[in-house]
Image (cartoon, rainbow, N blue to C red):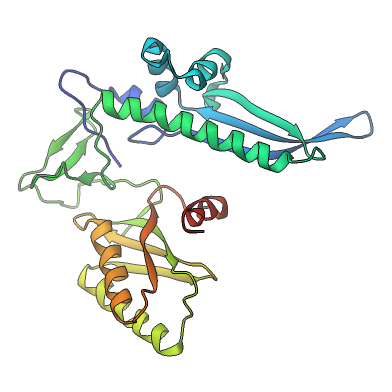
Length: 285
């Protein structure tokens, strides 16, 4: 994904690099178990919530902290985070001993609050610079124009009738193959839906037909109890949403009860972790 600047505000190559996303703000929140060892034995075990914030977002928000004067969570984060080099700005967002009643629930609540805090900070950056999320290096601004990232100029430019030759480079965090970008899709089954042999066959045919129609390569298709995980290679001129929504729509039409939920999870950064998938599925439980 690459971003579009707003009016006179311009992101330098250093700014983009310090946003960690390769093209936009990326931060992370972790909830992990920490075992503390004293002398030659285990002392205590804690559930720890910790956030790592990309330097550009943290520093830009800090410069504009007055705009967050009514957002106590952001202010607290700005006051307590420490810069740790390649880890960016790190802040402890809560910890609780595992044997305390309700420990897991408390830790998960602290994690979720921290995630929402970072999302608000990211949205501030997005609004300030009018960032448009687009897939890979190609995207649109709800018009007929197509855009591509110009590394030399440090900005996104309209492609016009530009074509991609052997010297054109495109990029994606998850990798490029055959001049196509790798995307991961998680599509969730509707509740109580049960796959039947006939339905499986129909879905495979639809996936095969649509992938051929959109020139998409299916690297893998994994089926689990509640969802499917597709790993695909999509041409740079094909909107990923158009492909997966077509697959979902046609699949739902072959059965009286829809097979898939219309919402889906998509990433061209990394293969979704089980934690990310579980968080996505929670929306429908």
